[in-house]
Image 1 (spheres, helix red, strand yellow):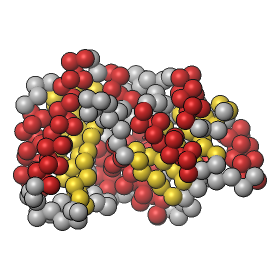
Image 2: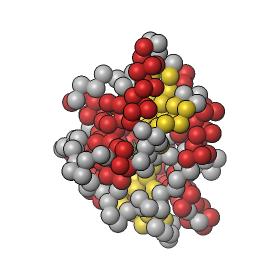
Image 3: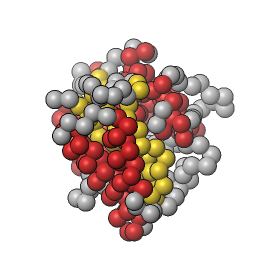
Length: 284
Ligand code: PAF
């Protein structure tokens, strides 16, 4: 496996792979790789000949009051994991390499899909994500790109971007990977104290309860949201950012009685750590 840090080196690797007729899988990450990322790399290695894992803590998707500086950076360990799961290249550029101009060129998806859920409390976040992912798509020219369902809104935003900008690739979405106790894997879980970690189990628990209620026939969106909100509020360490239900695709407003496919998503703070989780409620 090769670790490359510059755009020029990555372009060389990609050109070589293309000349050999290899299909390319891209796994964009911000590093601090965990079992969730491992599942993306594994899927990419199964479905493509040549896998690129990018490791870049993207400054443009963090607001000034967020955790850009504190975000865990573990490149050596990331390379070991990426190689073990089948990556051919880890691309770990500097911010200067990814953003060479002092003035910005943005790629921005507009509308409801970027305004609801995390878009409300993190208004510049998705513009940063779509800008950096466009750059990575242009550089790696993947046949397939891999993202986790844990970031369900990011997935919807990126689907729109791929469609609107005609990126010639398939967006592959992999299921949420959880710890044995049910907490969704996230690089931010490392911020949690043991007590906060235990408190955060309420997220998976309340989403499973909502899923069971839906399976038992509950179709009232407000009731499902109220049920999850009440369960999370019982946990004193939890501070809710949102508990919301939206229609898929594109996060349109959920209408009761619920029909088709809907996303129940939560963002909750435990101490200074903000976690997200979700479940898709789908009529079978
Ligand atoms: O999901 C992430 O880790 C990031 O938002 C991504 C897609 C790597 C862009 O920086």
